[in-house]
Length: 559
RNA sequence: UGGGGCGUAGCCAAGUGGUAAGGCAACGGGUUUUGAUCCCGUGAUUCGCAGGUUCGAGUCCUGCCGCCCCAGCCA
Image (cartoon, rainbow, N blue to C red; front, side):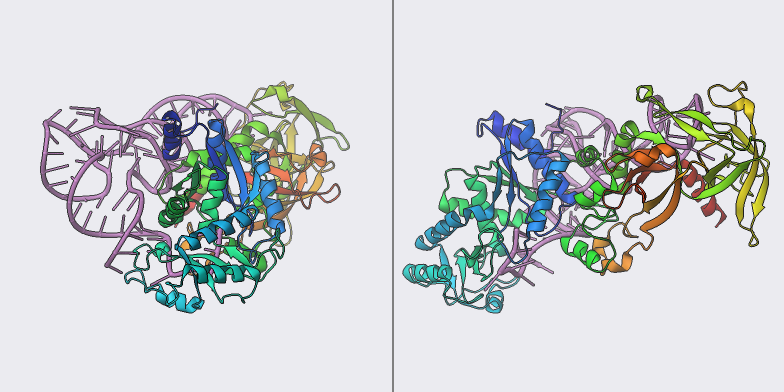
């Protein structure tokens, strides 16, 4: 058992185990299948499955499918795939609120019989008007004191389909003057003549969240029902159901704060709008904060779990910087990913003193800190591609790369010197003529002279072409949730596509394999669009880049 | 302005009356054929503010301030 951090929820759980209140911890992850799971859900999944696993308990994956109007099978399939991919297993415990529709209905009748629920025939608008406001108490519905028999009859006829949508609603009879709005006679059942994805047309009345969720928890013997802060006000209602119905197992609801990531949005509605408007390609677009998107982007599941662990579990509103997530991703990939060379924005270099037609195979380590991963051979020849950014005609003093007359080491190969810069009619640099020093070959060279910079390259004659997608944050402000219209703060440059040159060994890389393109970042073949002739790579995350910082600071100093 | 929560460094976060852990970021320095990795070092006389209790307060009490959530027949 790993040493998990003792956040306030784990403390409660351990206290309950120590005191003998519970012998076994049972939790549940209860998504509504009306959208894809996102980074916020990752936290809930890790928490629910985590605390149970750490204590030898069990976790249910339960679909909160009480509103057939919004739900779809596509989402249930995606949810299962995503939870599994994240590394969790619910075993036999895959359930649905709809599994309990029968028991839920019976419990509702029981409340009616107890005089604790009534059928209200007011319209939705009238009910709203009777509810009062945050500072003013509500007023009782004229139907509030219907006799039990009449309520029972009406409720049964609601179920039998005798009424149209909205004609009646079953309400709990609690307190219309409660300062807690959730206790002002909340709706328990509404009429919806619509097929349910699982129960078909068996039902035309569907239970509301509070009622269904509380009882589903009780039915499954959930010990700790963990949810987010906005449900804090619902806890008195949760407890009210338990107090009145007295199920044999009494769950406890505990709330924690959501995980918000800076520069992203997690509202299903808003993510859906971005898809509709073509801002992104779908729920699994690599820029999306969905599990599907992050998986396609190349984020390892272990990195996501590590990220969530670093965030902690508290009740404080949080907006976590992207850097924390990126750090988790780099930390995992830095160890696991093999190194390769690729040039994203190619500039041709001709080695004028290198024999035409000659090819040398250069040995390169697959991982500088893990020699056990071995080496590979990379072909070297007279013409190579280097990165455009690695050459500057008028370079600042601290620029350690190539400049006219300057020297640089080609990684795993030779030291070269820039002799001539060739430009087109518009003055753009299109080619560099350089000479190499034969005594400086990596590993076997006779010269031990050193140069300040080392750059990556790809032999032009052997280069494998690929489309590489470079991603950036989707929004330009840290908290797009806080602006009037999130579409106003979209980052227009969240996707850049380049035609890159890869070293030959990359030709056979498959989706699912992540590698580091040295000096550039971590990349992986795209799981949707990559194929053997038409290679498509995603940049998962860049490497830390202290040169970029120096450059930025220099720019700011000038302005 | 009713009710429910939350305020410890730029972002997270330990701390459970005994003298402010840790991570990320930032900033210095070292190693390095990735300006990566790795390694070393630098941060709170102070915990939203003001009083009070106490030998002693981030922890207890009082008042104030700020932020978040709630008026779906959504979850």
